Length: 117
Image (cartoon, rainbow, N blue to C red; front, side):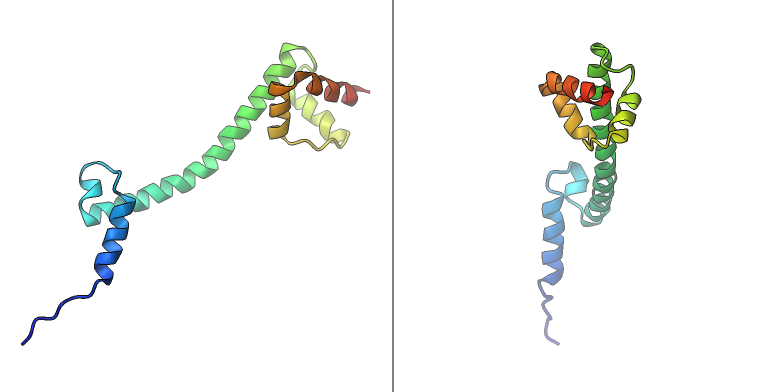
């Protein structure tokens, strides 16, 4: 009986997985089973961290806005500023407000004075 040579599909799949894990340390970049397990873990962590990143940036923006507001006594708290913003229907999101607070504080003071009127 003649020898049957296997195809290239399984090898191609393994090399693709190996390229993904090439930067991992030790057996996690050398052994196929370990590589597949580590790839699953890495993708799960990446998915979780995308949600965590959104939360972290929102917290950062809120902290920046609150710090500028309290430093110059524009408002007593962040929550009151946001309440009055929504009440007056000035729809500025937290990211834009944080950028305004850092780069152009006078503009934030103008916005707050507009709310107080």
